[in-house]
Structures are given as C-alpha cells and as structure tokens.
Length: 216
Ligand code: TMP
Picture 1 (cartoon, rainbow, N blue to C red):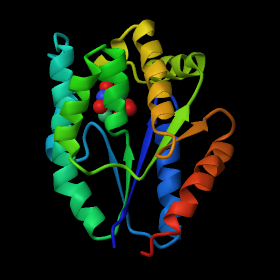
Picture 2: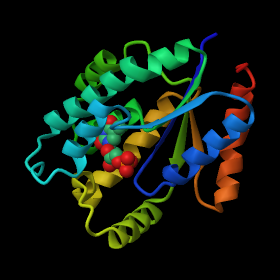
Picture 3: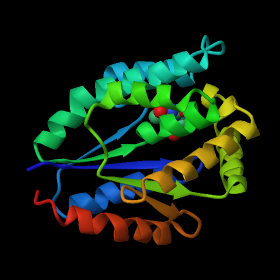
C-alpha cells in the first residue's frame, strides 16, 4: 500500500510551523504512522546544508545558482534516505516545504530560469511527488509583520534567506499564486488569516478525505 505525501508551502510567517504539528497530531489520532520533515533539512546531511544556506557566518556571498543546487542537494538526500522508504511502508509523510518552494524562491524570487529550475527539481525528486500540497496564503503585510516580530524575538539567529528585500518576497508571493493556478488538483490554497483553530479546520477539511483513503 503506497503511503501519502503531504507538503506545506507558503511565504515567511504564513503559520506553517504552527499548523504542521496540528495536522500531524490529527493524523496520528486516526492511527496513521506519520513522519514529519522540514526543508531544507530533514536528514543529517540536509541539516548541515540548511545551516550553510541559512545561518552560517560565511554564507553572505552565496550565488543564486549555488542556493538552487544546495536546496536540491538536501532534497535529493531526503527523498532517497527517508521519504521513499517511508512511503513504500505505507506511512504518511508531512513535509514543511518541498519543491514548490524552489520554484517560488529560486525561480520567481531569485529570477533563475524556470525551465532550468524545473530540471534541477526533476533530478532531485524523480517521480516522488506530493499527493497534496497545502499552500498557506497570507497577505504580504501580515507576512512582513510576522517576520519582523520573529526577528525581534530572536535577534541572535541571523538568516540569510530573510535578508532579501521586499521586492524579492513580492515575487515569491506572485510565484506561489502562479504555481497554485498551474496545479489546482494538487495544490489547495488555504487562506491563513483567522484563528489557529479556523485555519486548522480548513486544512483538515482538505486532508481528511485523502487520509481516509489510506489504511494504516
Ligand atoms: P523555514 O524553514 O523557516 O521556512 O526556512 C526555509 C527558508 O528556505 C525559507 O526562507 C524558504 C527557503 N527555501 C528556498 O528558498 N527554497 C527551497 O527550495 C526551500 C525548501 C526553502
């Protein structure tokens, strides 16, 4: 029995880190075996790559091309080391970001050639594709405000990705809208403003029917 692969996507401050554990908890209550990962990262090699991409003190000169390849190096490892074996065992994978982030951030945000980006993603993931993607959409102003407040509570944790300018994040947002419009069957847009419970319910309405098709 093939498992189920669910990914979360969204701009900074879209509430993914709150909603991912809530969905995982629900799925486990239903008796499913669930593994949860984040990208970049999720494996020992991937977590080292994540550090290089985000927090390393020597990453300021990183080119967009190096960024694209490192994101996908982490992904290639995650797919082969853990995602494929878990799906083959019939488990549910929930991943905080996957390749739509690369299209949005490196493709639309950094403005790398979209076809090249697609080829790199294809190499990294092969035929391992999400069954469902939950795109948590928040207005740009909400995203910026949440990012500012997170940075003010954790000023010691520098993040190279968050140093990009407003135009970059606006392009990322436009990119997500374009990707969601291109894949309406897989990507469900969740309007992530409202209470945590309201957003959780909206997510569950989409995820539950799919989870019900998998017997754990
Ligand atoms: P986060 O775990 O806090 O969301 O941080 C991950 C950062 O990396 C975030 O700024 C989005 C970015 N990212 C990309 O630019 N491309 C990718 O393919 C992925 C997975 C993440």
